[in-house]
Image (cartoon, rainbow, N blue to C red):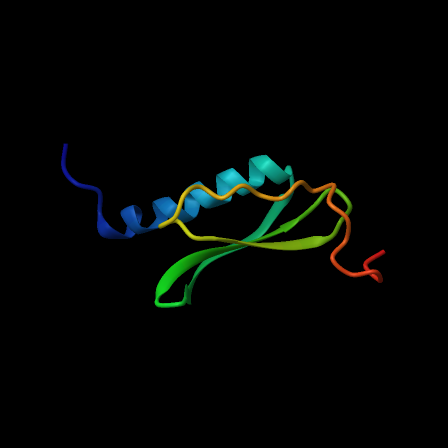
Length: 81
């Protein structure tokens, strides 16, 4: 089997991150992109959760698979409601 084209191969970690976060949060993905951070590229995925709140998850494909926080966690600020 011939090797995958470079562009398709580079998108695999991003696709994996999107699927993992989409399944774990049951939210709708708004955007996903690779961003430089600390000398490497990480995946930034923005979702809308079940309550309509926008959440941003950062996933480093070079480390172990990320576990998204429980969407029922308390708000990060007291004025989020």
